[in-house]
Amino acid sequence: MIDPIAFELGPFVVRWYGIIMASAFLIGITLAYYRASANNIDTNHILNMVTLIIPAAIIGARAYYVAFEWENYAGDFLEIIAVWHGGLAIHGGVIGGVIAGLIYVRIYRLPVWKIADIMAPSLILGQAIGRWGNFINQEAHGRAVSEQFINYFPAFIKNQMYINGQYYHPAFLYESIWNLIVFLLLIFRWPRKKFQGEIAMLYLVLYSTGRYFIEGIRTDSLMMGPFRVAQLISVVLIIIGLTTLIKGFRNAKNL
Image (cartoon, rainbow, N blue to C red; front, side, top):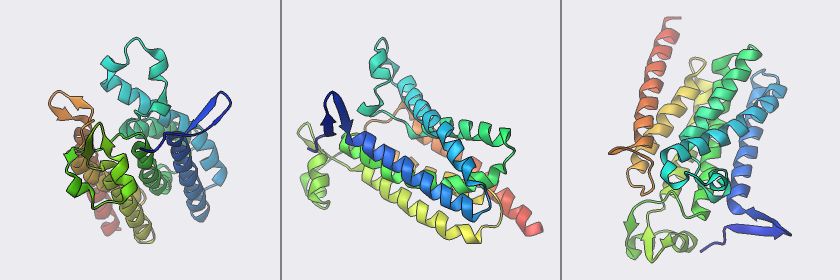
């Protein structure tokens, strides 16, 4: 098992989870900065915007997770804010980040869909990287599997997926790879896009499709009655994305 603590500086403990998440944010910001510059958007807006988006995303991701796992957090305020222990729901993070981003965009009257297209590749790339934080914390894994099955994976993944005497599907890896594929597809599509907002909507559809199926094998899904919350949200996002894409392509064709 990989030690979740990267190093200690006196009383301060630095965890791999935090390092990986910080790296995901930094790489995503750098990409968004570059794409904004290439698309005639003042890069200062990107830097200013992320100072709102990052804390809003973290708060949203944690609040979303805690809300659906309230019985495990009720009465323990310190554990509620202990994000370094894991327990960040990406859908909550996206909601929090989008709200903060929309507020900024509205205040400064920036082109909403153009900004959304710029941010989408950064978001999915950050998600691909961030899943490795789940790997370190031995979370977001799938159902139990045989040793014969897990032997198809590198030894370091096999060892980390050995939890309480049982091997598990490295679902984090499946999603990380899928997110990376989506990122590459979005970058490939960018110079060929037909309307503003196309890249953002492709992100919604592609990411949500992969998440829907991967969520089906996870053992730690947030639940709403008999339903997995992430799958319900994924279906809603796929419908929104497809509806907007169809409308956008029709409008672009009629121009």
